[in-house]
Amino acid sequence: MKIVVTGTRGIPNIMGGVETHCEELFPRIATRGLDVTLIRRQSYVHDSLVEWSGVKLIDIPTPKKKAFEAIIHTFRAINTAKSLKADVVHLHAIGPALLVPYARILGMKVVFTHHGPDYDRDKWGSAAKNILKLGERMGCMFANDVIVISDVIRNLVEQKYGRRKNVHLIYNGVPEPHICDYPEYFKELGIEKEKFILGMCRFVPEKNLHHLIEACSRIDVQGCKLVLAGDTDFEDDYSRRLKETARSHGVILTGFIKGRKLHSLLTNCRCFCLPSSHEGLPIALLEAMSYGAPVVVSNIPANLEVGLPAGYYFPCGDVDMLAGKLQEVVNAPAKRVKYEMDKYNWDTIAEQVVKVYEGL
Image (cartoon, rainbow, N blue to C red):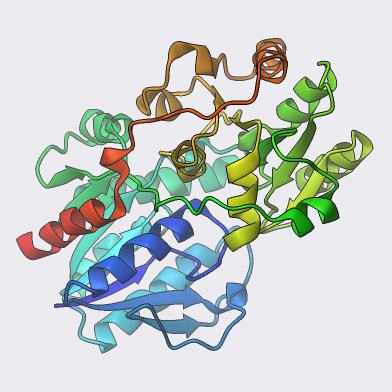
Protein backbone atom coordinates (compact mmCIF):
# COMPACT_ATOMS: atom_id res chain seq x y z
CA MET A 1 0.00 0.00 0.00
CA LYS A 2 1.39 3.40 -1.03
CA ILE A 3 0.74 6.24 1.44
CA VAL A 4 1.50 9.90 0.66
CA VAL A 5 1.53 12.35 3.59
CA THR A 6 1.02 16.10 3.38
CA GLY A 7 -0.20 18.95 5.57
CA THR A 8 3.09 19.14 7.47
CA ARG A 9 6.08 21.41 6.88
CA GLY A 10 8.28 18.33 6.89
CA ILE A 11 10.52 16.02 8.89
CA PRO A 12 12.97 15.62 10.58
CA ASN A 13 13.91 18.43 12.98
CA ILE A 14 11.34 20.98 11.84
CA MET A 15 9.52 22.95 14.52
CA GLY A 16 5.83 22.34 15.15
CA GLY A 17 3.37 19.96 16.79
CA VAL A 18 2.16 18.37 13.54
CA GLU A 19 5.79 18.03 12.47
CA THR A 20 6.73 16.23 15.69
CA HIS A 21 3.66 14.01 15.30
CA CYS A 22 4.67 13.01 11.77
CA GLU A 23 8.33 12.57 12.70
CA GLU A 24 7.40 10.00 15.34
CA LEU A 25 4.52 8.30 13.53
CA PHE A 26 5.51 7.65 9.93
CA PRO A 27 8.87 5.92 10.43
CA ARG A 28 7.00 3.44 12.63
CA ILE A 29 4.38 2.95 9.93
CA ALA A 30 7.12 2.41 7.33
CA THR A 31 8.59 -0.41 9.44
CA ARG A 32 5.25 -2.21 9.15
CA GLY A 33 5.76 -2.73 5.42
CA LEU A 34 3.86 0.24 4.00
CA ASP A 35 5.35 2.46 1.30
CA VAL A 36 5.33 5.94 2.89
CA THR A 37 6.23 9.19 1.11
CA LEU A 38 6.08 12.52 2.93
CA ILE A 39 5.89 15.78 0.96
CA ARG A 40 7.91 18.60 2.56
CA ARG A 41 7.77 22.38 2.11
CA GLN A 42 11.15 23.23 0.61
CA SER A 43 11.44 26.58 2.38
CA TYR A 44 11.61 24.82 5.78
CA VAL A 45 14.09 22.12 4.75
CA HIS A 46 17.77 22.42 5.62
CA ASP A 47 19.03 19.07 4.39
CA SER A 48 19.30 17.09 1.16
CA LEU A 49 17.61 13.92 2.37
CA VAL A 50 15.54 11.82 -0.02
CA GLU A 51 14.71 9.24 2.67
CA TRP A 52 14.72 9.28 6.45
CA SER A 53 14.05 6.33 8.78
CA GLY A 54 12.28 4.42 6.00
CA VAL A 55 10.11 7.37 4.91
CA LYS A 56 10.67 8.71 1.39
CA LEU A 57 10.90 12.49 1.22
CA ILE A 58 9.95 14.81 -1.64
CA ASP A 59 10.53 18.56 -1.41
CA ILE A 60 8.18 20.93 -3.23
CA PRO A 61 8.88 24.66 -3.67
CA THR A 62 6.35 26.65 -1.65
CA PRO A 63 6.22 30.40 -0.97
CA LYS A 64 6.90 31.03 2.72
CA LYS A 65 3.84 33.20 3.24
CA LYS A 66 1.68 32.58 6.31
CA ALA A 67 -1.62 33.26 4.54
CA PHE A 68 -1.40 30.82 1.64
CA GLU A 69 1.68 28.59 1.81
CA ALA A 70 -0.26 25.61 3.21
CA ILE A 71 -2.93 25.58 0.51
CA ILE A 72 -0.44 26.00 -2.36
CA HIS A 73 1.77 23.25 -0.95
CA THR A 74 -1.19 20.92 -0.44
CA PHE A 75 -2.42 21.42 -4.00
CA ARG A 76 1.01 20.59 -5.38
CA ALA A 77 1.41 17.68 -2.97
CA ILE A 78 -1.91 16.10 -4.00
CA ASN A 79 -0.90 16.34 -7.65
CA THR A 80 2.40 14.69 -6.76
CA ALA A 81 0.54 11.95 -4.89
CA LYS A 82 -1.57 11.29 -7.98
CA SER A 83 1.55 11.03 -10.14
CA LEU A 84 3.01 8.55 -7.63
CA LYS A 85 -0.19 6.47 -7.89
CA ALA A 86 -0.85 6.77 -4.17
CA ASP A 87 -3.49 4.51 -2.69
CA VAL A 88 -4.04 6.82 0.28
CA VAL A 89 -3.37 10.52 0.82
CA HIS A 90 -3.04 11.33 4.52
CA LEU A 91 -3.74 15.03 5.12
CA HIS A 92 -2.88 16.73 8.40
CA ALA A 93 -4.61 19.82 9.87
CA ILE A 94 -7.73 21.71 8.84
CA GLY A 95 -6.06 24.22 6.50
CA PRO A 96 -4.78 21.58 4.05
CA ALA A 97 -8.09 19.69 4.49
CA LEU A 98 -9.72 22.32 2.27
CA LEU A 99 -8.47 20.20 -0.65
CA VAL A 100 -9.80 16.84 0.55
CA PRO A 101 -12.55 16.93 -2.15
CA TYR A 102 -9.89 17.58 -4.81
CA ALA A 103 -7.95 14.48 -3.75
CA ARG A 104 -11.17 12.45 -3.81
CA ILE A 105 -12.04 13.72 -7.31
CA LEU A 106 -8.62 12.49 -8.46
CA GLY A 107 -9.60 9.03 -7.28
CA MET A 108 -7.52 8.65 -4.14
CA LYS A 109 -8.63 7.54 -0.70
CA VAL A 110 -8.16 10.26 1.91
CA VAL A 111 -7.43 10.06 5.62
CA PHE A 112 -7.66 13.41 7.42
CA THR A 113 -6.14 13.97 10.86
CA HIS A 114 -7.83 16.81 12.74
CA HIS A 115 -5.19 18.27 15.07
CA GLY A 116 -7.43 20.99 16.47
CA PRO A 117 -9.60 23.97 15.47
CA ASP A 118 -6.82 26.25 14.25
CA TYR A 119 -9.30 29.05 13.54
CA ASP A 120 -9.26 29.67 17.30
CA ARG A 121 -5.62 30.76 17.12
CA ASP A 122 -5.09 34.45 17.74
CA LYS A 123 -2.72 34.90 14.80
CA TRP A 124 -5.44 34.56 12.15
CA GLY A 125 -7.63 37.36 10.82
CA SER A 126 -11.32 36.91 10.07
CA ALA A 127 -10.82 35.87 6.42
CA ALA A 128 -8.24 33.24 7.34
CA LYS A 129 -10.46 31.95 10.17
CA ASN A 130 -13.33 31.47 7.74
CA ILE A 131 -11.12 29.58 5.29
CA LEU A 132 -9.88 27.34 8.11
CA LYS A 133 -13.46 26.64 9.15
CA LEU A 134 -14.26 25.70 5.57
CA GLY A 135 -11.20 23.43 5.54
CA GLU A 136 -12.46 21.70 8.68
CA ARG A 137 -15.85 21.20 7.03
CA MET A 138 -14.33 19.78 3.82
CA GLY A 139 -12.13 17.39 5.78
CA CYS A 140 -14.84 16.19 8.12
CA MET A 141 -17.46 15.75 5.41
CA PHE A 142 -15.46 14.31 2.52
CA ALA A 143 -12.49 12.36 3.89
CA ASN A 144 -12.94 8.59 3.81
CA ASP A 145 -11.73 8.41 7.39
CA VAL A 146 -11.12 11.08 10.02
CA ILE A 147 -8.58 10.71 12.82
CA VAL A 148 -9.00 12.96 15.86
CA ILE A 149 -6.29 13.34 18.50
CA SER A 150 -8.59 14.04 21.45
CA ASP A 151 -12.09 13.36 22.67
CA VAL A 152 -12.70 17.12 22.59
CA ILE A 153 -12.13 17.12 18.82
CA ARG A 154 -14.21 13.97 18.33
CA ASN A 155 -17.16 15.69 20.02
CA LEU A 156 -16.60 18.77 17.84
CA VAL A 157 -16.70 16.66 14.66
CA GLU A 158 -19.91 14.97 15.75
CA GLN A 159 -21.69 18.10 16.97
CA LYS A 160 -20.74 20.40 14.06
CA TYR A 161 -20.92 17.95 11.17
CA GLY A 162 -22.95 15.02 12.48
CA ARG A 163 -20.16 12.63 11.58
CA ARG A 164 -19.86 9.47 13.65
CA LYS A 165 -18.87 6.88 11.04
CA ASN A 166 -15.18 6.27 10.35
CA VAL A 167 -14.04 8.74 13.00
CA HIS A 168 -11.12 7.31 14.99
CA LEU A 169 -9.80 8.64 18.30
CA ILE A 170 -6.02 8.16 18.14
CA TYR A 171 -4.06 10.23 20.62
CA ASN A 172 -0.81 12.09 20.08
CA GLY A 173 2.10 10.16 21.51
CA VAL A 174 5.38 10.67 23.23
CA PRO A 175 8.66 8.75 22.79
CA GLU A 176 10.65 7.20 25.60
CA PRO A 177 12.47 9.95 27.52
CA HIS A 178 16.23 10.37 27.15
CA ILE A 179 17.23 11.22 30.70
CA CYS A 180 20.50 13.13 30.53
CA ASP A 181 22.64 15.98 31.78
CA TYR A 182 24.47 18.53 29.65
CA PRO A 183 26.65 20.62 32.00
CA GLU A 184 28.37 22.50 29.18
CA TYR A 185 25.04 23.62 27.74
CA PHE A 186 23.74 24.68 31.14
CA LYS A 187 26.91 26.70 31.69
CA GLU A 188 26.40 28.35 28.29
CA LEU A 189 22.81 29.28 29.25
CA GLY A 190 23.75 30.34 32.77
CA ILE A 191 21.32 27.99 34.53
CA GLU A 192 21.55 25.26 37.16
CA LYS A 193 19.81 21.91 37.50
CA GLU A 194 16.33 22.15 39.03
CA LYS A 195 16.60 25.94 39.22
CA PHE A 196 14.64 26.91 36.15
CA ILE A 197 11.04 26.91 34.93
CA LEU A 198 10.68 25.63 31.36
CA GLY A 199 8.32 26.84 28.64
CA MET A 200 8.54 24.99 25.31
CA CYS A 201 6.49 25.99 22.27
CA ARG A 202 6.26 28.28 19.26
CA PHE A 203 6.26 32.01 19.95
CA VAL A 204 2.69 32.74 18.88
CA PRO A 205 0.00 34.68 20.79
CA GLU A 206 -2.22 31.74 21.78
CA LYS A 207 0.64 30.10 23.72
CA ASN A 208 0.42 33.02 26.20
CA LEU A 209 4.14 33.10 26.91
CA HIS A 210 3.72 36.78 27.76
CA HIS A 211 1.54 35.64 30.67
CA LEU A 212 4.29 33.26 31.80
CA ILE A 213 6.90 36.04 31.74
CA GLU A 214 4.59 38.37 33.65
CA ALA A 215 3.76 35.71 36.24
CA CYS A 216 7.43 34.95 36.87
CA SER A 217 8.13 38.66 37.31
CA ARG A 218 5.57 38.77 40.17
CA ILE A 219 7.00 35.97 42.31
CA ASP A 220 10.02 35.39 44.54
CA VAL A 221 11.89 33.09 42.15
CA GLN A 222 14.50 32.15 44.80
CA GLY A 223 17.25 31.79 42.23
CA CYS A 224 15.11 30.04 39.61
CA LYS A 225 15.18 31.37 36.06
CA LEU A 226 12.65 31.15 33.26
CA VAL A 227 13.83 29.30 30.13
CA LEU A 228 11.82 29.53 26.90
CA ALA A 229 12.71 26.87 24.33
CA GLY A 230 11.27 27.64 20.89
CA ASP A 231 10.91 30.35 18.30
CA THR A 232 8.51 31.50 15.59
CA ASP A 233 8.06 30.47 11.96
CA PHE A 234 7.21 34.03 10.95
CA GLU A 235 8.81 36.91 12.82
CA ASP A 236 6.07 39.43 13.56
CA ASP A 237 5.23 42.20 16.02
CA TYR A 238 4.17 39.71 18.68
CA SER A 239 7.30 37.53 18.53
CA ARG A 240 9.60 40.57 18.44
CA ARG A 241 7.82 42.14 21.39
CA LEU A 242 7.86 38.84 23.30
CA LYS A 243 11.61 38.45 22.84
CA GLU A 244 12.28 42.03 23.88
CA THR A 245 10.14 41.58 27.00
CA ALA A 246 11.84 38.29 27.79
CA ARG A 247 15.34 39.75 27.55
CA SER A 248 14.38 42.74 29.69
CA HIS A 249 13.20 40.31 32.42
CA GLY A 250 16.31 38.13 32.28
CA VAL A 251 14.55 35.21 30.57
CA ILE A 252 16.79 32.65 28.84
CA LEU A 253 15.87 32.19 25.15
CA THR A 254 17.31 29.00 23.64
CA GLY A 255 15.80 29.20 20.15
CA PHE A 256 14.46 26.05 18.49
CA ILE A 257 16.29 23.04 19.94
CA LYS A 258 16.00 19.26 19.81
CA GLY A 259 18.09 16.30 20.87
CA ARG A 260 20.38 16.35 23.89
CA LYS A 261 19.90 20.05 24.59
CA LEU A 262 16.14 19.69 24.86
CA HIS A 263 16.34 16.38 26.72
CA SER A 264 18.65 17.89 29.33
CA LEU A 265 16.22 20.77 29.93
CA LEU A 266 13.29 18.38 30.33
CA THR A 267 15.32 16.13 32.63
CA ASN A 268 16.36 18.94 34.99
CA CYS A 269 13.62 21.61 35.00
CA ARG A 270 11.92 22.60 38.26
CA CYS A 271 8.62 22.51 36.39
CA PHE A 272 7.14 22.81 32.91
CA CYS A 273 4.51 25.47 32.18
CA LEU A 274 2.05 25.66 29.27
CA PRO A 275 -0.34 28.64 29.68
CA SER A 276 -1.98 28.26 26.21
CA SER A 277 -5.43 29.42 25.26
CA HIS A 278 -5.58 26.90 22.38
CA GLU A 279 -4.22 23.36 21.86
CA GLY A 280 -5.17 20.15 20.09
CA LEU A 281 -3.47 17.63 22.37
CA PRO A 282 -0.13 19.25 23.26
CA ILE A 283 2.86 17.04 22.53
CA ALA A 284 5.08 19.43 24.52
CA LEU A 285 3.01 18.71 27.64
CA LEU A 286 3.14 14.97 27.05
CA GLU A 287 6.92 15.16 26.60
CA ALA A 288 7.34 17.03 29.88
CA MET A 289 5.16 14.45 31.62
CA SER A 290 7.25 11.60 30.19
CA TYR A 291 10.28 13.13 31.93
CA GLY A 292 8.39 13.31 35.22
CA ALA A 293 8.44 17.10 35.35
CA PRO A 294 5.88 18.82 37.59
CA VAL A 295 3.58 20.77 35.28
CA VAL A 296 1.48 23.92 35.51
CA VAL A 297 -1.01 24.25 32.65
CA SER A 298 -4.06 26.28 31.66
CA ASN A 299 -7.47 24.69 32.15
CA ILE A 300 -8.46 24.61 28.47
CA PRO A 301 -10.31 21.45 27.30
CA ALA A 302 -7.29 19.90 25.53
CA ASN A 303 -5.15 20.17 28.67
CA LEU A 304 -7.96 18.97 30.93
CA GLU A 305 -8.33 15.86 28.76
CA VAL A 306 -4.84 14.76 29.81
CA GLY A 307 -6.37 14.21 33.25
CA LEU A 308 -3.85 15.83 35.57
CA PRO A 309 -4.61 16.39 39.26
CA ALA A 310 -6.71 19.52 39.77
CA GLY A 311 -3.88 21.39 41.47
CA TYR A 312 -1.82 21.35 38.28
CA TYR A 313 -4.30 23.59 36.44
CA PHE A 314 -4.99 27.31 36.60
CA PRO A 315 -7.73 29.38 34.88
CA CYS A 316 -6.55 30.31 31.39
CA GLY A 317 -5.50 33.96 31.25
CA ASP A 318 -5.43 34.44 35.04
CA VAL A 319 -1.88 35.69 35.58
CA ASP A 320 -2.35 36.01 39.34
CA MET A 321 -3.36 32.36 39.66
CA LEU A 322 -0.50 31.31 37.39
CA ALA A 323 1.94 33.27 39.55
CA GLY A 324 0.54 31.58 42.64
CA LYS A 325 1.00 28.10 41.15
CA LEU A 326 4.58 28.90 40.14
CA GLN A 327 5.34 30.29 43.59
CA GLU A 328 4.15 27.01 45.11
CA VAL A 329 6.49 25.07 42.83
CA VAL A 330 9.46 27.31 43.64
CA ASN A 331 8.77 27.13 47.38
CA ALA A 332 8.49 23.33 47.42
CA PRO A 333 11.49 20.97 47.19
CA ALA A 334 12.37 19.87 43.66
CA LYS A 335 10.67 16.59 42.75
CA ARG A 336 9.73 14.24 39.91
CA VAL A 337 6.20 12.97 39.23
CA LYS A 338 5.09 9.56 37.93
CA TYR A 339 2.37 9.94 35.28
CA GLU A 340 0.31 7.27 33.53
CA MET A 341 1.54 7.41 29.92
CA ASP A 342 0.45 4.08 28.39
CA LYS A 343 -2.14 5.53 25.98
CA TYR A 344 0.46 7.87 24.49
CA ASN A 345 2.71 5.07 23.17
CA TRP A 346 3.78 5.79 19.59
CA ASP A 347 4.09 2.11 18.63
CA THR A 348 0.47 1.50 19.64
CA ILE A 349 -0.58 4.66 17.83
CA ALA A 350 1.19 3.52 14.63
CA GLU A 351 -0.69 0.21 14.76
CA GLN A 352 -3.98 2.06 15.14
CA VAL A 353 -3.27 4.27 12.11
CA VAL A 354 -2.25 1.27 9.99
CA LYS A 355 -5.61 -0.34 10.82
CA VAL A 356 -7.33 2.78 9.48
CA TYR A 357 -5.41 2.41 6.21
CA GLU A 358 -6.21 -1.28 6.01
CA GLY A 359 -9.90 -0.48 6.51
CA LEU A 360 -9.77 1.46 3.24
